[in-house]
Image 1: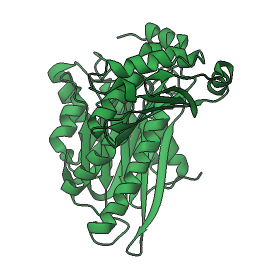
Image 2 (image 1 turned 180 degrees about the vertical axis):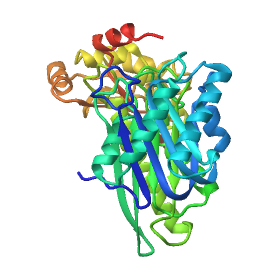
Image 3 (image 1 turned 180 degrees about the horizontal axis):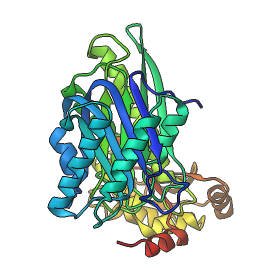
Amino acid sequence: MAVSVPKGFLMAGVHCRIKRDRRKHDLSLVVSETPASAAGVYTQNLVYAAPVALDRSRTPSDRIRAVAICSGVANACTGERGLRDAEEMARLAAVACGAEPDQALVLSTGVIGSFLPMDKIGQGISAAAVKLGRSETSLVAAARGMLTTDTIYKVAHRTLTIDGVEIQVTGMAKGAAMMGPNMATMLGLILTDAAIAPQVAQASLSTATQESFNCMSVDGHMSTNDTVLLLANGAAGGKPLAGEGLATFQKALTEVCVDLAKAIAGDGEGATHLITIEVGGCASRETSQEIARTVANSPLVKTALHGADPNWGRIVSAAGYAGVPFDPNGVTLRLNGFLLYQHGTPVEFNGQEVSTSIRDHRDTLIQLDFSEGSASSRFWTADLTAEYVRLNADYHT
């Protein structure tokens, strides 16, 4: 499916020698031709990286022109020097597009505790500025520049029409492990040519994040660098969104974020299954999400599914220690549509048939229903594999 770049945005991705492999991009530059409304949501970890500190101080805003992204070095736990380096990285990005120093944001991901190689960063921003474009090729290059252990680049897109104006919403993201809301070890950048006021953009992004990136986990580990940014430059024309138009935009924005969140969970390091957990019949959305998150983060559930084992006991018991009160006799469990457990009691099922359905399909669906109310939620995770252990045992600081 073709993915369009929203009007008024330019982007590029290059290799600037942060990563050893010259075939891999490690720096991206995204530029808005006019000042854009910018919003951000960030890690809730008390230990947060310098780029998070800088971006938090600059969003929401109505005057952002550029975002510079580097991968390979996280610029986390780097003290005052890290803050200065983040500010300099932003300044270089702003200069590259003729903007003021405070009109740029930065994203970094990679090894924690290392300082940014600012000479390489500067050269990379200059090289990316020369290659800025609005083609799908430019978008893919920029999306590749933010990857670390990802096996695929991640982009998503929606086109919608509001009051006769065609609007594009396009997102890119990275993430494969160290994933645990809120949010996960991830970077995300959503671009739109819709006209949106900064505070409205902030509310819209927060809502979309709650339904997407905060409903996704690979290993339950919250990162220092998690950031999702939304830039809206109004280049499509029309009045700032409100009312029904804003609701239409919200739906598209949430869909883009959901697509990216599922892509991240499905690309979990060493993952062989994307697991969707649907929890219903709860007293509130918060309790349903807590149960789903607990099941998603259970190593025993994740390893069972990797081994194609329909082990209902691990799933039901994980729900039981989520810290959410419920009637155990009101629990029903389906796995890939097969009924395994009903009203607190296991039922007869063909274990080989269920196992085959897991083994032969990358997508796995867990459905848990309770008898406490009508609230529900979805959550995404990945299975836990020997390859995940190998990759993270080899990763270093």
